Length: 423
Image (cartoon, rainbow, N blue to C red; front, side):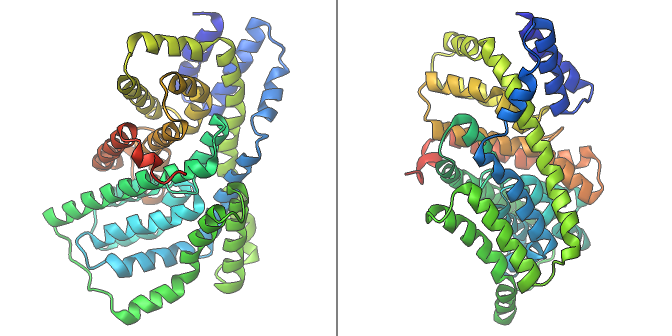
């Protein structure tokens, strides 16, 4: 391999292994290549700027802010209550309420960390108070939170749409059935667990309680209708939908529900900016990394190698899924998408994989990676809420990760799961 290839592979892996944040590791590798190979150093700031100039990427901070506003304004608590009154009397009723609330919240925030934090802050203490094991409660919230990359509108699909130059609206639709399939798998696991080791069931909610919960939660329930209805009704683009979600959450929180105050807004905006900055920093520096990877013709070389060793499409898809899963276990998913995106797309094109189907497969991998030990991002969000260490939560989440892997197999080899709703 060339010096550039060694720095971009072994050098990057070494920096990550010693604990350097991904954005810094990527930036150092890019700068090292520029200095050692003799490329103009101004390439780095140019690619940093170019990597963040896509209009579609504006959706990321706005969806993050929408999630924070919904949480601060009490809409997440209303969603949980609505979900609870409908399913609490069933086996695993409280568990099912977590899943249902996560699906609805994800349809507004588009963010797995925001969904995990919003639902976890309400449900983990409540589940522990009712006698649930804290590690299991945390694992369930994390597994439900990572539905967000699949349930539209999804930040992960926005990023992939920019990388792959595909319609973000069509990519959103490709995630609906995989997301619902994954939610159904979670429901099967929790109901089966409840039947094997029964927890005391809650009484069925009466009509008056259901009506009260719906009346109080109507603004929270209307949020996904406004966002998704606006996108597919042609009222606004996915990026504009993110802004609409923020305005909606702000108006409801400040004017209608009045559970959000102007005094809270600086903290809410600051929290959203912190998370958005992490994502955008990785996207920015990864653009330079991708440029050097392309200059070394690594995508072409890897595609040729795969064509030599994997003659069938199904074996190639299996190899990509295994490789992505192993990388996601030790690397940030956004970095994987931005760095390896052009390479993965080149390989998929060579084997004739539909680009929308391929996007659904990649984002299903992203969802699994956010929950999978040892560095799944949402694992650490759940651990921060519950105060637990990694090992208990990792052990409790394994059945959910296995189920997600089965969903990935279906999405990979049955394209209809991704394409049935795509026009």
